[in-house]
Length: 402
Image 1 (tube, one colour):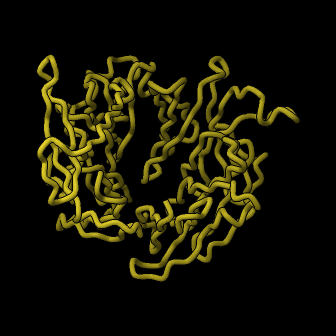
Image 2 (cartoon, helix red, strand yellow):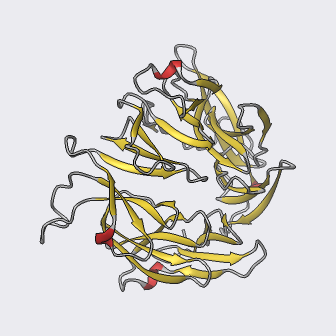
Image 3 (cartoon, rainbow, N blue to C red):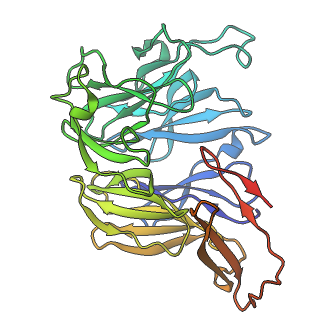
């Protein structure tokens, strides 16, 4: 494990942000640089925040003008988080400090952001008390936490917890409601109407929903409602009626396929749909109207993740890994659909010395089970080689190891 590890960069205004661990650091350091060819500078080094190296940092959200970022500090492995704010230019820490935060991002709107917190626990029960009545609050930058405004909670269901999402045009706030590890409710609020009470968009906890993008009042949503392998739908919030059947009010933008739609991101005015096809990633570029334009060329059979960004971005980054590829970061030009290697991990290993093949083995009922065979080039495959067979499954799949 002692080798340099990088995250894929994220472009925020003129700056690129990424994390790096030299291999032996307790926590990865967050860097930023001006321009893609700029000199990396330390933005936040969590290793210097505690003597034992257990302070963890996460960037929770950048302001839409890309001048500020809210970040969270978790100490000693606790889920409790303190939110602070930094000015991007010059990495200047501001005076904002929010306590008793758990399971929260920072969704910026105007000169502040929405976040989730609990009431302050009684003294001595900070790490042992039961957390109830999660809440969505709005914090205005430069003010004290006691001036924050509560936006939403539900005291009749004290064990539910919430997340927030603001569209890039700052028109809508979406409030995600969960009561376990599966199932999502979503409420929405038109932020151009300050006195509007959040309205239910998707009720119940029988399905998963995720808002991907909006074009004015039209929103694009990924869901498994009506599609076990997930599909993309669109609906118009201006004409949405929460008392009507949801499925009668949406249009199917990208239908369900035989492959699982694992993730959908948006960047550069395009959608990127990441499918799990025979246990390998396949990523496709779509228009907002649901028209498939291109399959992103990946280095080989493996797993890819990333592809997110802002609507005016010209490129996105993704990380690719496989049985023979250590995590490698690639750059994808949206206009000309070209993939180029951006940065490789510092691991002392030559993937070109090995081969990965995918085969399919028929199960007892005829189901074709995908398998990967990995071996050093030049190996004589005569059935006499020592072989490690490994199988894994979870979340309605199987697990078997031999």
